[in-house]
Length: 110
Image (cartoon, rainbow, N blue to C red; front, side, top):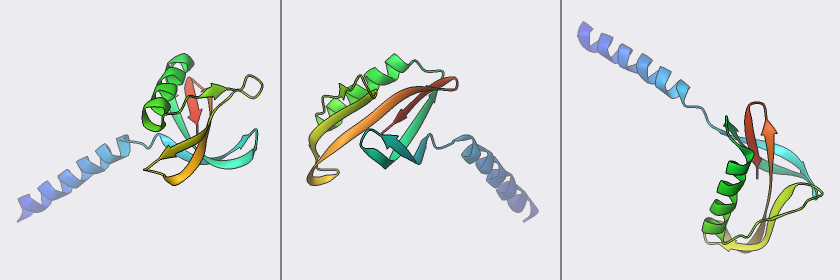
């Protein structure tokens, strides 16, 4: 009985360390965009190049939503309007995002 309890305790401690090592890279935040402050999701990529994140985000938006993101030079925002997806619903929606350097990496806010 003692061995089973000890084994269970060690297993749970190991699991706790493993679960702690995996952090959630997506943060919910409010972002001030060109059209006002809105809730958004922020993803931070450490040791990443902003051009790489930009290319991957544009490719993902095109494959997933059929979006052709356009960059507003003045505000630095990427946007696509009139998108439809069965995952989100039947109404059209818009995507707005920014890509900026953050610490030692890049942050994508959508």
